Image 1 (cartoon, rainbow, N blue to C red):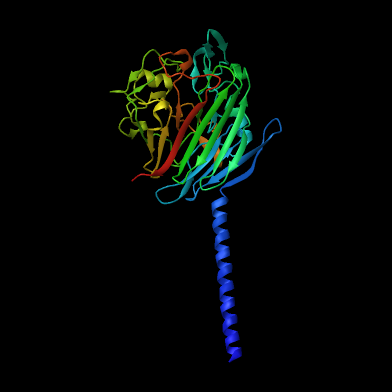
Image 2 (cartoon, rainbow, N blue to C red):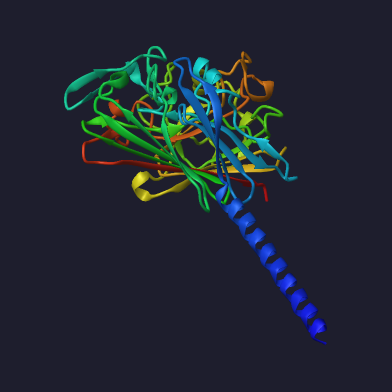
Length: 387
């Protein structure tokens, strides 16, 4: 009898130990899923010998975003299509050396000033400044070596929603801009499949700041160009431009023009129409004026859809404008990721920002940053499926 009870007790102990081990294993597995959300790998060498790293963020849905410390560039964005198949929906390169050699701003942080400044000139308190005219005759996207060509310091933060905090000190008179500017850009991958980008900057001298991200999107993963993508922009007006893409006087009404995206329509529907503005931009390369500015909080600026894949992307921002660029200057000479050649309109940009040439336009929302002030800007790109 004693032996029988001893065996029974022994069996109970074995079962309890097994259950304990199983629960312990499950707990460890759960912790691994929750914390293994930022993976750092090598991304190659720059010409000066610096080692670049690639940080891959993964959310609980399996969406992955990879970002490099060179230029704060979004290298890849993997999201599912209507059949659950993952594909990369941004243009770019497989290694940092190619970004350094020939990058039309694929995925980069743009600064100090995104977009164009007429003839590279502006003034603050009566003092004139001359910037590089790297997009002759104008200044473009921060100059010859803007933020897109700098190494950023990175802090990875794991948790429920992984993020990267990237910092860079832009020194006084770098690229001709006054003031030492401390920049911080935070990328967060949310569990709503959104890339949330928070821009911050502080200066020790009055300067101008207008940062943005310059990702080229193609929601079908590059299976075709973006002309069959559908786009909706929530704006009644846009900045009409001259032949050098500098805004002309006044804001233009989109009504009865190819620039009316208030109702969602195919990008290719009007892009080749006989229109002076389309000729100036070689397609769409214009800033739409959103109905609220940053002080009003974040608003829905645009919705992009691709019927082929079923993917959608919503753009929300605190910025007063959104630059829609339809990839007009891609010409097939660039070989990007996976050996794909990027031909004209292989991707499009939806850059949330202040208006072009704002430092010279008192009628536009201002871009002046004073000491003691903090530049703040937020944009989210949220991916989903057509319902």
